[in-house]
Length: 79
Image (tube, rainbow, N blue to C red; front, side, top):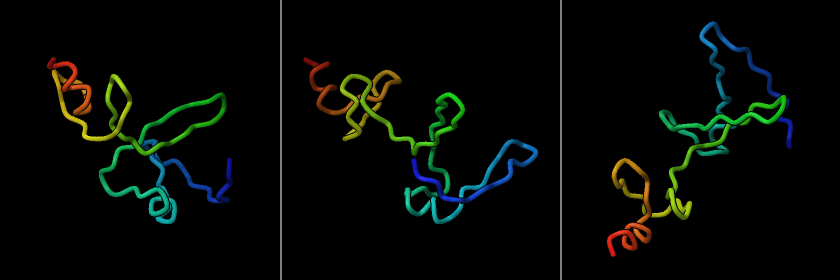
């Protein structure tokens, strides 16, 4: 893991601000979603990317009965 040396305070509502340099390097824009993970004493943030519930592919995602499904798996379902 790489340390950035950046320290931020948590505000009254539990928010932190990600520095612009980090947002740019991870291509995070306003309204992008971030997943939150924990690992022992660490909090890990990851840019959210929808993926197929069957094959985990992030390519050509469609909505099928409330679930994210790629076009390839959707074609298999329709058979």
